[in-house]
Length: 428
Image (cartoon, rainbow, N blue to C red):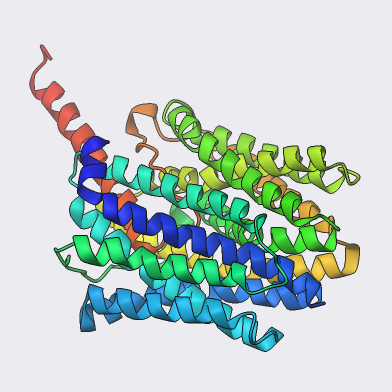
């Protein structure tokens, strides 16, 4: 870990500030939208717009990088983000916020792709998994800190919009001044979606459902809190509970997943998330009960993304793993774009606490489908053939997922080499 920090401290510092800025603007817009009397459905469109831009940016940024280089793309997207953050309180219109969220989603996606390609270039085969794990810790820690900053300012003013703009601007200084190599960026093969679904129906369905749930966590929780009458401190604590639980649960769940039938773990985690959704939905306005439900959801749904990716890789060949990442990102992205709209529509009809009912229902659907798949295919892969769990979240870009896939491939090749050596040497 020391080597990882030594080689990439500037990148981690810059990404931490970027995540503080991104985490702050998402929650802040949810709260401010309620003050400006935007409807729940209007805010669902605003929140969904971010993921539409993010999905588009994930596919376009690699071409931009190949055309003009990492540094120019990084600087251009960063300055655009900073400008949009300041414009939010100036153009208080649904159409302006929606357009701004599309652009900011596109830009953040491009920034992440660029930064993660630098991270991958700085990492070696021996520490790539650790680098990715620490990167995910930095991301979630930034979001958690952002919620604390939210409680220190006036959501009706301008200062809280200026702070993320400044943080984003400052984030580029350590990265651009300290990172010298410009990594190559190759084209990524894509696996046919039909082939991906046939290889692992459970992982494909899970990725789609998690896309909607993750998008709701990232944007609509603040909208729920505003509609439910929570104050700013309670909303920030609610969001912190979701990501704090995710941070704490990620690695223990990964350790367990390498030692048992992953389908069972997927079913258990999805069922716990479903239970958490029901607890939150029927909390009766008791904030502590709401926090417990939200913590259960955050601690299970975020690690589920990496778990589903690892499970799918158990059924893929080496050359299919890298190609499959693009397909999974697309499936997850479609769910993320549509998720907030569905949540906003349901909340508009049945009230704010219906938000948690939808989360619980989606996760219970995944749990039930997992049981169905176990009945349809009782025998799963042997324990010695499973690929290792690598921490990666539903917010991952193509680069982060490809880094995870490289770790999977390296581990599988090493395992096959050890098995071959044992066959050739009976005394081993």
